[in-house]
Image 1 (cartoon, rainbow, N blue to C red):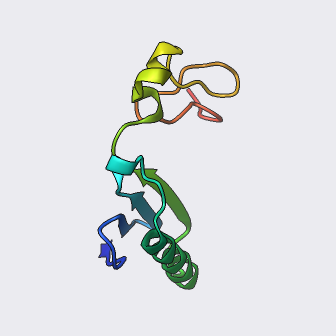
Image 2: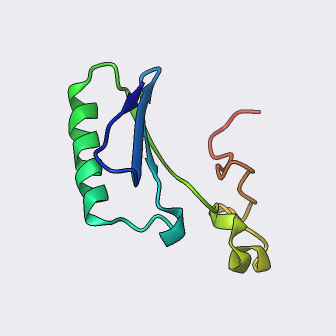
Length: 97
């Protein structure tokens, strides 16, 4: 279910007990504008009041950290142990094989 945030710069939805918030200002590397802070605050208030929401995930539109030319020159994004971060921008911390 999509949730109106009041700004196209923040996209929100609820899926299977998870509240998703997407920063949608890739042209500014998803820098947070005042209207986005308001949407983020409202997201927290609504998610906290909804007993179905058990977790929140934040993501951003546009380039991943390791897609940036400067990051590619450094060998891509790495987790604290120095391992490459996966294709979806997630490391394997705590994941079972």
